[in-house]
Length: 285
Image (cartoon, rainbow, N blue to C red):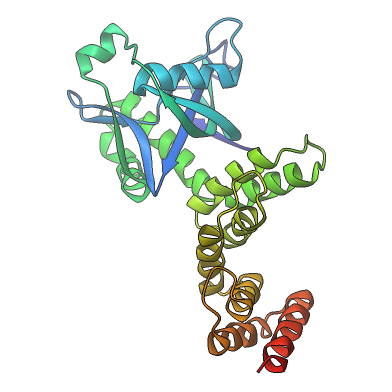
């Protein structure tokens, strides 16, 4: 997990008070869930302060339910941002979350006055909004918050490899409980980030039913997406699908095209599997 420190110009040499918070990153089909206050034209990643005797995941779940009306399942805490202002240390833990339901919102009096509402906007647009933190230099609280959210989303966009690594650990029970369902959920999040190997691995899950229901259509689409991005294992499996007529209609020309592409891979096992499948293609003619 990454840790980022942000130091305000008014910070004391040593903080005397700590105020912890948890925030949730919820992304679906390229859109992120944010909280928006129309009255002040202010955006923020939903979340808030940890209450007494409350766990971090529980705080994240409660805060997102209260602010947005969405019930979430925290999957992975990928980041802590420590902010130092005056005599305070404000640690914020950021969780990548999955929506699992909806509920009634429960807003504070201030949030009601500000007209706080949940909004889904493209991730790129959110990053652009928060990147303009210096435009709010006259309002220190807004400038600091936008800087924090910009750093959080930048780190999120680079979290694909960590998500893939944790997913594979859960598949094999390597240092963590074996949990195919959680592994698939983590791979879906990495796929949202465009991670090519995670795209292929998610295809494997749908192909063989690891943590999800078998769906050859989704498996093929994911393999094809990975293959189109130049991933050798994806190319070999797309070739195999066409060669054997798995989900798609048999097409030896397409099979040969993808298997030959796979043989250009730098991974010896991919080259060997593609070679064997290509030989089967020629023998069956």
